[in-house]
Amino acid sequence: MSARRIVISGRVQGVGYREWMCRQAQAMGLSGWVRNRSDGTVEALVDGEIAAVEELLRACRMGPRLAVVTEIREDFAEPPERAGFERLSTL
Image 1 (cartoon, rainbow, N blue to C red):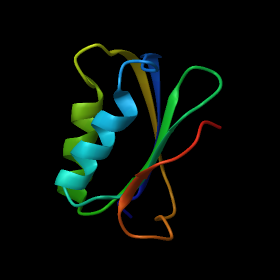
Image 2: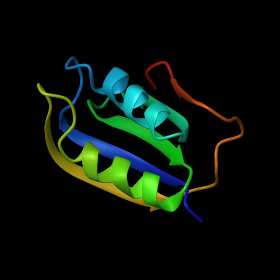
Image 3: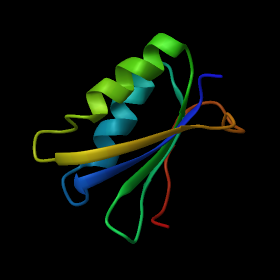
């Protein structure tokens, strides 16, 4: 199973993290979504070729230029219902 649910903590809201992640995931041909959470974290569901998922997870540890990532929690997940990668509303 290559689908992963991740929760990214740190200074990750208000720094363009979701847009950055959408661009990265789309360029890698991944499916899923990304959204802000009301607790200040960013949550994402990512699925695709294992190497691409792993590459995106490595990139997420740095994030966009203004982000400061302090922790990433990662779990296996069911794949998304739709192809493509999208930005969802805050949960």
